[in-house]
Image 1 (tube, one colour):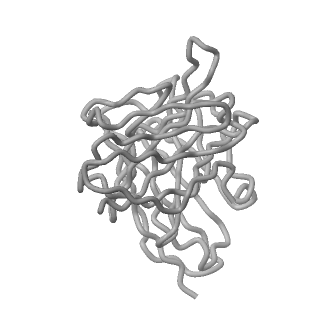
Image 2: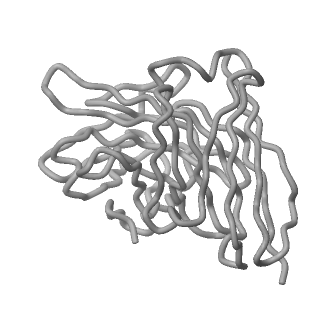
Image 3: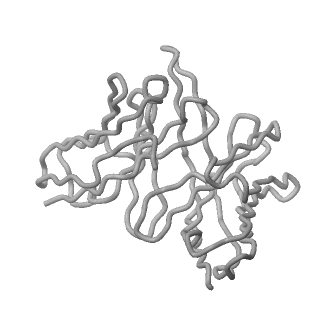
Length: 127
Length: 108
């Protein structure tokens, strides 16, 4: 059974860099058919996609965060990482890592499904 | 702002049927996936594709789509179905994941 576990500081000072790690067990992060990404959820609000990475090395970011985000993979440790620079109070959120599968169906339609999630970690930005 | 639009809140009487909708242009090319999130927990995938349920998801959950609108239907809602529900797909570029704003389901 695939498991994802986020880790990192729960408190980050404003203007500094938020760094989180997602450890994957029960499967390889090097798998060529999945995207691995980060999603966050501010307290009391909805889900916001941050970005993801594919086995090819391609990375994709939410345009609203692109200038501050770096997502990378360490295949030797089976880990996904997130760096978010120049944080403000608006970056206070629960951060989730998740695996995404993108499927093409017989009718030509596509599907994006995030089938495995970490339990999430709360990061608070202090002033 | 989300490129997928959901009603903020919906309520249903215990045992009745409720439909939660998700609208967006990308849904003309993508089937929406649906997630259930209870307080303090990670989202759980409940429906994906045309109408597929992951293992362990009760068959009272079903999905459908028409044009730019996807729907999640709960037939015979139970108290434990009270949760926030989110839809997701990719955007029209195909490069970015998008989520709806979420629907809070109350079971009366």
